[in-house]
View 1 (tube, rainbow, N blue to C red):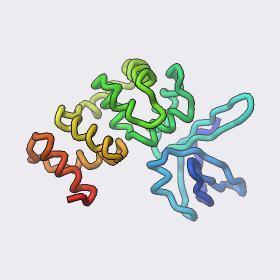
View 2 (view 1 turned 135 degrees about the vertical axis):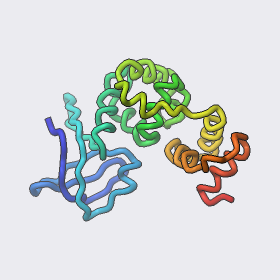
View 3 (view 1 turned 90 degrees about the vertical axis):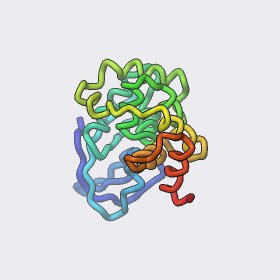
Length: 193
Protein backbone atom coordinates (compact mmCIF):
# COMPACT_ATOMS: atom_id res chain seq x y z
CA UNK A 1 0.00 0.00 0.00
CA UNK A 2 2.73 2.49 0.96
CA UNK A 3 5.87 1.43 -0.92
CA UNK A 4 8.15 4.42 -0.28
CA UNK A 5 8.19 7.49 1.91
CA UNK A 6 10.08 10.73 1.40
CA UNK A 7 10.12 13.54 3.92
CA UNK A 8 11.90 15.33 6.75
CA UNK A 9 12.83 13.61 10.00
CA UNK A 10 11.23 15.64 12.79
CA UNK A 11 11.84 13.29 15.71
CA UNK A 12 13.88 10.22 16.59
CA UNK A 13 12.40 7.82 19.14
CA UNK A 14 13.73 4.64 20.78
CA UNK A 15 12.66 2.36 17.94
CA UNK A 16 11.12 4.68 15.37
CA UNK A 17 11.38 8.03 13.64
CA UNK A 18 8.73 10.58 12.78
CA UNK A 19 8.84 11.60 9.12
CA UNK A 20 6.84 14.65 8.09
CA UNK A 21 5.54 14.59 4.57
CA UNK A 22 2.76 16.78 3.20
CA UNK A 23 2.05 18.24 6.63
CA UNK A 24 1.53 14.80 8.22
CA UNK A 25 3.97 13.20 10.65
CA UNK A 26 4.23 9.44 10.18
CA UNK A 27 5.79 7.14 12.79
CA UNK A 28 8.07 4.70 10.97
CA UNK A 29 9.79 1.83 12.76
CA UNK A 30 13.34 1.51 11.40
CA UNK A 31 16.29 -0.79 12.19
CA UNK A 32 18.65 0.54 14.86
CA UNK A 33 21.59 0.63 12.42
CA UNK A 34 19.70 3.03 10.14
CA UNK A 35 18.27 5.09 13.00
CA UNK A 36 21.75 5.67 14.41
CA UNK A 37 22.78 7.42 11.18
CA UNK A 38 19.71 9.65 11.00
CA UNK A 39 19.41 13.20 12.32
CA UNK A 40 16.47 15.46 13.03
CA UNK A 41 15.97 18.00 10.24
CA UNK A 42 17.45 15.92 7.43
CA UNK A 43 15.52 14.63 4.45
CA UNK A 44 15.09 10.89 4.13
CA UNK A 45 13.73 8.39 1.64
CA UNK A 46 12.65 5.00 2.96
CA UNK A 47 11.37 1.80 1.37
CA UNK A 48 8.37 0.90 3.50
CA UNK A 49 6.10 -1.97 4.46
CA UNK A 50 2.72 -1.42 6.11
CA UNK A 51 1.63 -4.07 8.62
CA UNK A 52 -2.13 -4.00 9.20
CA UNK A 53 -3.49 -5.71 12.29
CA UNK A 54 -6.98 -5.71 13.74
CA UNK A 55 -5.97 -3.15 16.37
CA UNK A 56 -3.18 -1.18 14.64
CA UNK A 57 -1.45 -0.10 11.46
CA UNK A 58 2.35 0.02 11.70
CA UNK A 59 4.75 1.37 9.09
CA UNK A 60 8.26 -0.09 8.83
CA UNK A 61 10.98 1.69 6.85
CA UNK A 62 14.32 0.63 5.39
CA UNK A 63 17.18 2.40 3.65
CA UNK A 64 17.36 -0.18 0.85
CA UNK A 65 14.85 -2.20 -1.08
CA UNK A 66 16.86 -5.34 -0.28
CA UNK A 67 16.40 -4.76 3.47
CA UNK A 68 12.66 -4.25 2.99
CA UNK A 69 12.39 -7.40 0.88
CA UNK A 70 14.22 -9.41 3.53
CA UNK A 71 11.91 -7.98 6.22
CA UNK A 72 8.87 -9.13 4.21
CA UNK A 73 10.42 -12.58 3.73
CA UNK A 74 11.09 -12.85 7.46
CA UNK A 75 7.42 -12.14 8.18
CA UNK A 76 6.64 -15.40 6.36
CA UNK A 77 8.59 -17.46 8.91
CA UNK A 78 6.35 -19.16 11.46
CA UNK A 79 6.75 -17.35 14.79
CA UNK A 80 8.45 -14.25 13.35
CA UNK A 81 6.46 -11.06 13.64
CA UNK A 82 7.40 -7.51 12.67
CA UNK A 83 9.20 -6.80 15.96
CA UNK A 84 11.39 -9.89 15.68
CA UNK A 85 12.13 -9.22 12.01
CA UNK A 86 13.06 -5.62 12.85
CA UNK A 87 15.27 -6.80 15.74
CA UNK A 88 17.06 -9.15 13.35
CA UNK A 89 17.69 -6.36 10.84
CA UNK A 90 18.76 -4.07 13.70
CA UNK A 91 21.26 -6.54 15.13
CA UNK A 92 22.65 -8.00 11.93
CA UNK A 93 23.43 -6.82 8.42
CA UNK A 94 21.79 -8.16 5.28
CA UNK A 95 25.14 -9.68 4.29
CA UNK A 96 25.44 -11.48 7.64
CA UNK A 97 21.95 -12.92 7.39
CA UNK A 98 22.65 -14.13 3.85
CA UNK A 99 25.91 -15.74 4.98
CA UNK A 100 24.09 -17.46 7.85
CA UNK A 101 21.40 -18.76 5.51
CA UNK A 102 23.68 -19.96 2.71
CA UNK A 103 26.23 -21.29 5.20
CA UNK A 104 23.43 -23.01 7.14
CA UNK A 105 24.63 -21.35 10.35
CA UNK A 106 21.59 -20.53 12.53
CA UNK A 107 23.90 -19.71 15.47
CA UNK A 108 24.84 -16.42 13.78
CA UNK A 109 21.18 -15.41 13.61
CA UNK A 110 20.53 -16.76 17.11
CA UNK A 111 23.01 -14.26 18.58
CA UNK A 112 20.61 -11.40 17.88
CA UNK A 113 18.64 -10.45 21.02
CA UNK A 114 15.05 -11.67 20.78
CA UNK A 115 15.83 -14.48 18.34
CA UNK A 116 15.99 -17.92 19.97
CA UNK A 117 17.72 -21.02 18.67
CA UNK A 118 14.58 -22.65 17.24
CA UNK A 119 13.48 -19.43 15.55
CA UNK A 120 16.97 -19.02 14.05
CA UNK A 121 16.77 -22.55 12.64
CA UNK A 122 13.32 -21.85 11.16
CA UNK A 123 14.63 -18.64 9.58
CA UNK A 124 17.57 -20.43 7.92
CA UNK A 125 15.35 -23.23 6.58
CA UNK A 126 12.68 -20.84 5.33
CA UNK A 127 15.02 -18.37 3.65
CA UNK A 128 17.33 -20.93 2.06
CA UNK A 129 14.95 -21.60 -0.83
CA UNK A 130 13.54 -18.08 -1.01
CA UNK A 131 16.60 -15.87 -1.35
CA UNK A 132 17.58 -15.35 -4.97
CA UNK A 133 20.71 -17.01 -6.42
CA UNK A 134 22.13 -13.52 -7.12
CA UNK A 135 21.97 -12.90 -3.36
CA UNK A 136 23.83 -16.15 -2.82
CA UNK A 137 26.64 -15.10 -5.15
CA UNK A 138 27.05 -11.83 -3.25
CA UNK A 139 27.06 -13.58 0.11
CA UNK A 140 29.08 -16.62 -0.91
CA UNK A 141 32.20 -15.28 0.72
CA UNK A 142 31.37 -17.47 3.67
CA UNK A 143 33.24 -16.62 6.80
CA UNK A 144 36.29 -18.77 7.53
CA UNK A 145 36.31 -20.89 10.68
CA UNK A 146 38.81 -18.48 12.25
CA UNK A 147 36.60 -15.48 11.50
CA UNK A 148 33.54 -17.31 12.86
CA UNK A 149 35.41 -17.82 16.12
CA UNK A 150 36.48 -14.17 16.16
CA UNK A 151 32.86 -13.15 15.58
CA UNK A 152 31.70 -15.34 18.46
CA UNK A 153 34.39 -13.89 20.74
CA UNK A 154 33.52 -10.30 19.85
CA UNK A 155 29.80 -10.81 20.42
CA UNK A 156 30.60 -12.53 23.74
CA UNK A 157 32.52 -9.37 24.67
CA UNK A 158 29.38 -7.33 24.09
CA UNK A 159 29.84 -6.03 20.54
CA UNK A 160 26.87 -6.34 18.19
CA UNK A 161 27.01 -8.76 15.27
CA UNK A 162 27.18 -5.79 12.88
CA UNK A 163 30.08 -4.18 14.79
CA UNK A 164 31.92 -7.51 14.93
CA UNK A 165 31.48 -8.16 11.21
CA UNK A 166 32.61 -4.66 10.33
CA UNK A 167 35.78 -5.16 12.38
CA UNK A 168 36.44 -8.54 10.74
CA UNK A 169 35.90 -7.14 7.24
CA UNK A 170 38.36 -4.35 8.03
CA UNK A 171 41.16 -6.84 8.79
CA UNK A 172 44.08 -6.63 6.35
CA UNK A 173 44.01 -9.22 3.56
CA UNK A 174 47.43 -10.50 4.66
CA UNK A 175 46.41 -10.90 8.33
CA UNK A 176 47.42 -14.27 9.82
CA UNK A 177 44.70 -16.94 10.10
CA UNK A 178 45.48 -17.51 13.79
CA UNK A 179 42.27 -16.87 15.78
CA UNK A 180 44.00 -15.05 18.65
CA UNK A 181 45.91 -12.74 16.30
CA UNK A 182 42.79 -12.00 14.22
CA UNK A 183 40.87 -11.25 17.42
CA UNK A 184 43.62 -8.88 18.58
CA UNK A 185 43.57 -7.08 15.22
CA UNK A 186 39.76 -6.91 15.25
CA UNK A 187 39.78 -5.39 18.74
CA UNK A 188 42.14 -2.71 17.47
CA UNK A 189 39.30 -1.60 15.18
CA UNK A 190 37.41 -0.59 18.34
CA UNK A 191 40.40 1.29 19.76
CA UNK A 192 41.22 -1.42 22.32
CA UNK A 193 44.84 -1.90 21.33
